[in-house]
Image 1 (tube, one colour):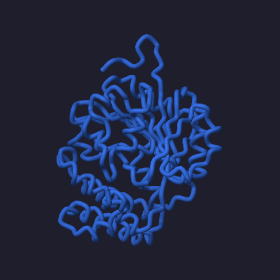
Image 2: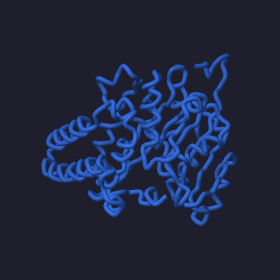
Image 3: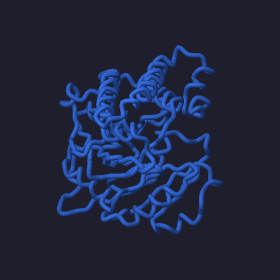
Image 4: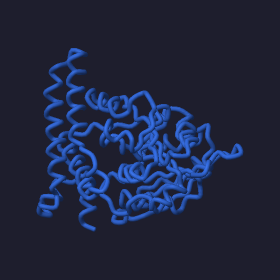
Length: 313
């Protein structure tokens, strides 16, 4: 691929943020983008339902462009793909509305990954919010370590499914490669980021994990929410065997549970292992149920999913 930094050029950046009922974290995100060390050409917000939009946010950043869609029109892949079509930058930096940059260098640290012309996507590190529960804090540290690395086809034996791991909570994409590869799948329940990352890895390109591009982002999901989230995750994997059929996912989950249990014992809180086992059981059941969703009645699917509107389209 061509060198985006050829002759001292600075690639132009478009920021893309899907939003639904955005709140205080979204406002913080806009303000943090305003203070980034790397210049941002435009911020494209794909807002679901105009009635939830606060017009005052349009004065926070002069480069803000807002497009309103109906809830029935939202799709994890399609909505982001439509925003990409509207963008004019060489690199698209994607955030979710609840991701808050830690400092002013997040975009700069994502963009520098593309000095390697084989890198097609770079994603950042997610740090827990102050209110984040202990087990989820460890999960964040496990999935988002403090060391950066490149991941490619040669790493599949070592990393398995983590080779494809990428998160649109905080990620950047080369637009030229994105267009060449066909971009995000336009009808998906979830996981559009990993589906795309898997596609480019299998074609010989690289995914860059940029540990110095940091955002605060975490959730305290309950057991039922974990079940539903993992159900949707497994549905996306079942629908894309061309990507996920090449690797196993269960091994990574077992590794996380074992490491978390050791950590809880190490910090002298072994009683939390019970909570870990229960949460992990809900995750596993959700995942296994999602894998066989094609055999399930529609009513059961709607009870299991976190995204019922996806199934009603």
